[in-house]
Image (cartoon, rainbow, N blue to C red):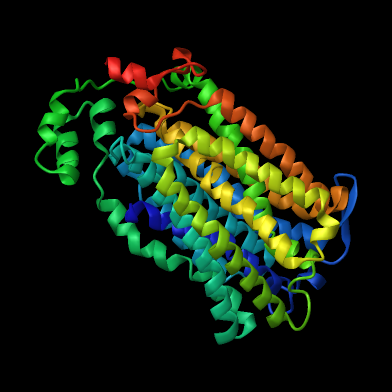
Length: 471
């Protein structure tokens, strides 16, 4: 769990530290974007400041890279094995994280952030699949959820490292330290990932190698490994990827669309926290250092009070309440929170504490529900042969949604206003709850071989527990 989870700590740190670094990047201490990106551009029928276009590109670059990386690494992992590429995605992250910290202009930063994003995207399908295939049925949701919960700690670390940097390092170097620091936790686990054995399920069910599967199982559970592998027929076969993906299209659409919707809201708002807080009058007064400090403190409060608890509440409840129920309810609370923010925006913007509370509730229940469950479900709803590919498709589509909405967040502010953006997110969150009801099967407490039954076996009215008992 630690080997897999530290990658997500790094991923989250690198993505969210920009909320603290961005005000510095835009200032003369960074790339002086207010001068180098002066003027405006017609975009989507609106005259938009070039400054906001460049800031949107910097903020969303890694997400668009993750869109490519998740799909590529997910498919390679099913074709060559999880172990074959595990650790390489962190190598990409480390290399381009360091390069991004030495960027000489915004173009170099955007390109290096896009390339490190490829590694970030690759981490999603491989780490989740490995953790799922190594977990027991009883605790699988908890263990995969704990891997993902490291994202919350990475988010918090980004705010805290940013806060320390601006008071210990000159501002012109502090943003470089913030970005470069993200390579340190990744270096720690590259070696450990390369030493990890291939998962027993992939070895047995795809490669037909019972001896290796037995050795990998024994490394985790001890002497009972022989009993486990002897009960399964080991047959090596050629996988019909396109045929299997067609059979599981309902689950692919369900996991991809719900994750797409959630990431639009989560990344779109989180990566633009500084702008959201500025719009309600928080963090705008005083010097640049004061403004950055206020942004870092605001991020820390949101992460510590709402985001991080949400992740660990999900870990504690996902194997009890179930994935589908948490996802459905989480989407509904998000929709209600965004609706309140939209309808009462003019009132709430004059009450910072109340605004942050309502905004924070969307974080809390988003992390209790769809942020965690959209990560877990693709590891359970698909068979071993396409598990990583399908997860890669879902996470790739999700990061595309995150990138698009993050890039357009400031632009949509012109078209809809801040209140209108929250109302739009309320509509999308409601849609996420509806899609969850009709395309997702409950998977708690069941072995992967049963949770990954074809959707044609039934979704509505399907009783896997009765079926499992009969077996």
